Amino acid sequence: MTKEIELIRSKRKTICIEITPDARVVVRAPKYAPLSEINRLIGEKADWIDKHLRKMQEKQKDRAEAPQPELTKQEIKLLTTKAKRVIPQRVRYYAKLMGVEYGRVTIRMQKSRWGSCSAQGNLNFNCLLMRTPEEIIDYVVVHELCHLKEMNHSPRFWAEVEKILPDYKERRKWLRDNGNSITSG
Image 1 (cartoon, rainbow, N blue to C red):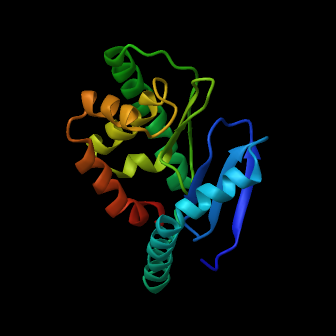
Image 2 (image 1 turned 45 degrees about the horizontal axis):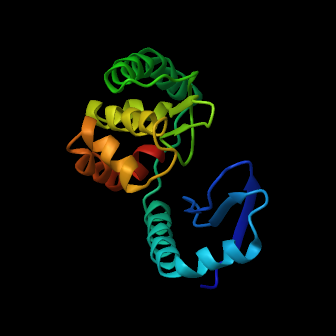
Image 3 (image 1 turned 135 degrees about the vertical axis):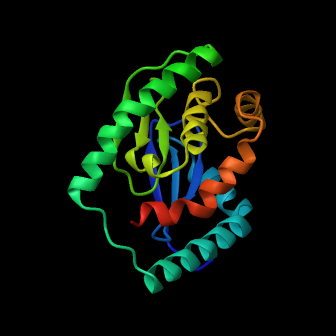
């Protein structure tokens, strides 16, 4: 692995490794996690990092070869307005179904995430979800709501997702296969 690794420390509880859309390796770790523990995890995940780095570099190359027009500010505004109408309603529906409570729901244009859930229970969603099929929007909503039960991607987390969306793997695959074309224009 010859790629430089960016380390970001914060108030999080776990260490995670991320390959960004621009093919950077980012390790997010708790403020006081020992460097030896971080390095051990990076070593254990070296094959995973290499594999996903190669994939992201291929996607970058593909995007460069077939550039998509950037969205205009007006298009982003329209997507955001629609998302503010659609997503909170889906969040309310699934939160009630799952028996979870959440904080704020925020919609914004994001480069690399479809959604996120903060430790305080606030939910963020990407306005570009409005360019995906309804079942994909529901998958992202359920995914983030499940983080209110499990703040990780453990087998227990995926079991929670599966309780609500037994076909979540197909939806997740669709997003992986088609997500880049949606985010790039």
